[in-house]
Length: 390
Image (cartoon, rainbow, N blue to C red; front, top):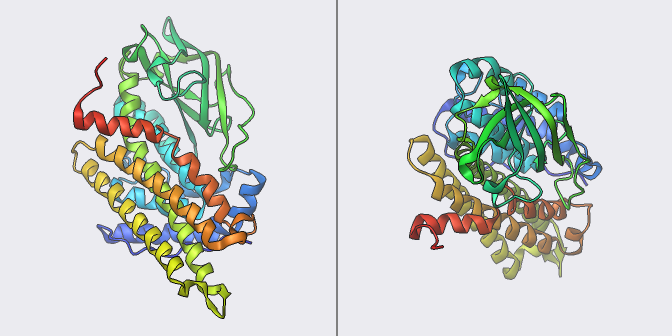
């Protein structure tokens, strides 16, 4: 059966412009995303036309400067847009978050000349980005990446393989981290690589448990030549750029997780009210009512946590610890809530006729991407007790 339209969330938004923005997103979600979400996910189809619409509507560059085509919205607002999109279809919400992550390096560390040349097309010109950090042998230990960039006159020649790349094979540009110096984090540099660069190719998409509409693939760089003008930041600054991007990206994942959890709760509540057993709605039974109450409470707590971290970011204050907390809590919440939603629906929840099983499969990946939740615990502990002794 088709997905239900997301139920409106009672949001506290800072401006009338933000309220209008959320209304626009909900309208697009209900008209263009929800009706075909289940069918397209089942078929593994990526909705590129939806991303074109989002770009045309100014929704792919929301947290970036208006000077270069961005929406200049605070993270407090941008993340709530992501939540709305993810509630409609995670492939879309996560795709917008990854595109923002891919745009971050240039927006935050690029020169004014680089930004003027590339950002308008990236933020509002219909382009779609990919963030290329992980490799087959370096996921959580990203500083051990082996992709190399060798200087050749005014160019760099990049060779290596990136893994687990969202939008791999369809991205119009890639933010690539490559080794230009010695082993370790100080030998890594960031580059902006065109998606059609000679020598750039992608493997067949991974066959995943969920999120089937979003292509995830290895990206191969076989002597890809890029000019030094496409180097972002200083040589050796790439790992610091990557970590800074991930602090913000983790908030995007947290918001997406709450969107999926909210969609699962809405499905569970609607089913519980409509389904009758023993002569009354199953929502009348205390055991089930308490499950719904716990699900709703966990969602509200997660939303409050990611918004608190976003407000720190918007104020220019340190937020890395809170971002890790938000990613950890919100994605664990999404896993618990979606699992409980399947239980509420009983046998129907285990079938593909209802979206609850898809939400459960999708929630799992959110505990893994952009730093596993075990890594988030390490980040949080490091802020509390200092680095581990070696």
